[in-house]
Amino acid sequence: WIEDEKGDLVKTVCATQFTAQGGYEKRAESIPMWVEKSGISTYDQEQVDAITTATPNTGKVMYLWDCKNEKGEQVPSGVYTFFVEGTIYKKSGVLYSGKIDISGGACEVEAVPEFTTDEAAESDLIVDVYAKYLP
Image (cartoon, rainbow, N blue to C red; front, side, top):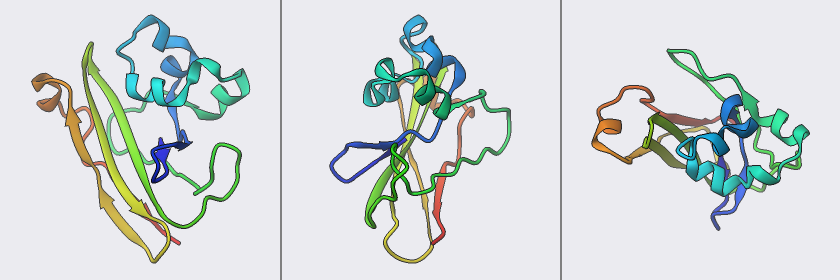
């Protein structure tokens, strides 16, 4: 997901089908920070469908943010924080985050991980998270 400089949700780029379609109610440990930030429980089916993706396969995965908000409006130039959250095993998770400036030229930023447990830190389920801005 993407947040503005005030910490407000700008857009959810994607969430797994399991979580977005109610899995967060069955498994509270399923990407809980995004569940809270997004307010997914208030989404209608069209909103859920717009962000839902299959659980990614092993290997390199790429997601695209078109620099638009949830309403499809172009966001202003500035600095945005991007997040990638993953549940590793039960209550073990990781949250990658980084800041990307979309007001200038092309740039690339490596996200920094925060792990909820030592077990999560030892996992290689999600590694090497980057964001690129290409004007």
